[in-house]
Length: 65
Image (tube, rainbow, N blue to C red; front, side):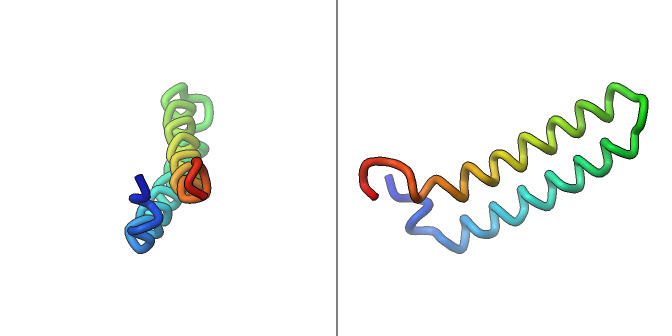
C-alpha cells in the first residue's frame, strides 16, 4: 500500500498538524508545574510528535522501496 507516497500533500498537512498540536500540548503541560494532569498532557504531546515522525518515515519503509 503506497498511500503516503501517492498523497504527499495530505501527508504534509497531517505532519504539520500533528507537529503543531504536539508542541502546543507539550508547552501547555509544561506550564502546569506540579500537577499530574500536566504530565499527562505532555505525554500526549510526545505521542503526537512521534506519530508525525512515523507518518514522515512511512513512505521510506517496506519492501517496495
